[in-house]
Length: 497
Image (tube, rainbow, N blue to C red; front, side):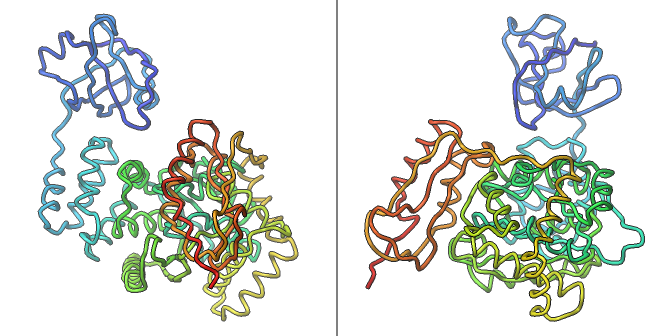
């Protein structure tokens, strides 16, 4: 029996949801109840969706409701049919992992394939992520997961190019928007950098969120190729292309869980880079008490896992440990971080010095990888390209090749917060600073976030501005302000003596 599809106008984000009447004959005859997983078929597409049951007056007799996400996937022109979803046999592998059994490459491929096909609900994806959280994936499982994530999507190749470069930060440090600057400097030096980035998982902004403020990031494969041919690099969102497509499905659920585990992190990063054709990858691992990686032992363990997986998968991976004791730059949030990036590239007098210096350090490491040279000479080359405007012109070229170069929006609401005593900044809590920016609306509200005006070791007087909260609504500004007032010690001011 075909049912007439009705767009319900309900935003379920990316979750596919179907709405059927409580007295629907199909529901009654097939035993469909709320939260049943159903195979939904249109003329040329099939997906699995979760059933929500509604009162009869919400839908006509022969109608079935579709969430916005389901409508966009199916594009139904005619009637649709529903039936029981196939049994997802790979869930037995997930349950085995819950009981600490090791997953073979075949098992991981089954799981990733089923997730890619949409067979898993968000609850089932959450179960897989939780089963693999912490250190529960060994080295072989991380390699297997990475390979499975690469295999399920498309891959880019670069005929005639021997070396393709990428740089990635594992996150956990507010601000720290070095990637656009590094790509501009290094592609100006002649390196090929088809950079694809994720949107924020647990942070107030990801590189893709920041670049989306300035230019188009939803490039398809052909547009990525064309941009790289024109400019030597790109700064695109990986979710718009099928390069390790399951990664974005996992990230969406990880964001809701506020979960970012080590083995999945390595698989996420390397699968995207290898699928994009990268052969040389630099990994920035910030280390600090309130960063994602707390100490050098954890950092070395993560770096060893990156290097091992890279070696097995045939790419060169280098890791660098950087200072994660405090945020980098001034802005935290998409538009505010974009402003910092442009200030550094334009050599503005008030550009954040820490963001400039770290970007130059990382550019030097990447250039040294390319030229088998020492980092001192590479840093001099990177500095020259930034100082003479070459990096700025290169960044402009990349943005215009991607489709636009936009003006950075400003937030309509803001609130300055001052120091309540004289002293020296003794600690800045990265995690609570990030939460403050997210409560203000970042990254969803692109102009929201915070501007941080102090760093560790700075001397402040009572009444000096410590930070400014930016928001796109008064409610979010008040929400963030309440959190700050309960957590003033996120910026600790110690005694001068």
